[in-house]
Each structure stands twice: as C-alpha cells, then as structure tokens.
Amino acid sequence: MKSTYLAVVGRIRTELPELDRLVKRTMSIWTQAKSTSDDYYVDAAALNLQAFYTGLERLFEVIADGIDKVKPSGPNWHQELLRQMASEIPGVRPEVISSNLRDQLDRYRGFRHVVRNVYSYNLDVEQVETLVMNLLPTMVQVSNELTSFNDFIMTLTSED
Image (cartoon, rainbow, N blue to C red; front, top):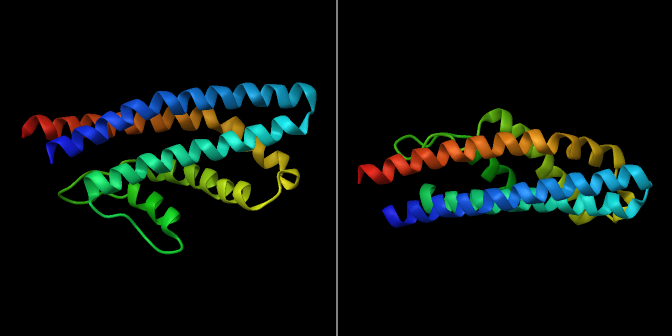
C-alpha cells in the first residue's frame, strides 16, 4: 500500500509542472490569438484547454485507482470521477479537490467534450476566452489543493 501511495504522490509531483507549462503555453497562444485575430490560434488555445483537463483527469484516475481502489464507470464516468475527487472517502482520504474547484473544472470537462465533438471553426470564441482567462487562477487552485492532498498522503505513508 505504501508504495502505491508514494507512486500517486510522485505522479502528482511530476504532472503539476507539466500542467503549469501547458497553462503558460495556452496563455501565450491566447495572446497571439488576440493580437492577430487568427482563428488558428483560437483552435490551438482550445486544444490546449482540452489537454489541461485531460491531464487533470489522468491524475484523478491515478488517485481513484491507487488510493480509492474504485473508479466510476458508465456513460457519465467523467462527471462522476470529478465528483468522487471532491468527496471525502471516510477512513481512506479527505476530498482531493474542493467543491468550488470541482465546479470550475467541470467547465473545462464540458468544454473538452465540445472540442472533441465539433468542428474547430464552430467553437465559441467567447467561451474559449472565458476559459483561458480563468485558467491561471484555476491552475493555482489545482496546484494548491493537489499539493495539500500530497502532503496528506505523505503523512499517511510516514505513519506506516
């Protein structure tokens, strides 16, 4: 169990800087989109927003598999996984993310679905802009909350 928990901690520590790099890249792309009015930059920003949520979801799956020992299934498993991460599992772990962060991330989850299922020229530029403008504060909150969760897991492993 200890090695599984430490693997989760290591994965979170590895992925957070990657997500941070992705956020910075998205912000840079959006700057180009605004200064050039080039739709290709909007498409690139949308793709990076999708990658941001996908990276987080992979982390949530690692936590669900390694710590919770259960992962949702069925047609709404993406939504259920997000809810699971915002819920305490008594005797196992506290909430991984706050309900406030869950609500913020749910917007990125929903947008990812849109990006995967519509032609890029049909993207709502205002929605992309809103998500890009909220990305940095969302990432700060993600980093803070996942770091706190990692600290909790490290406390558990030091007690063994």
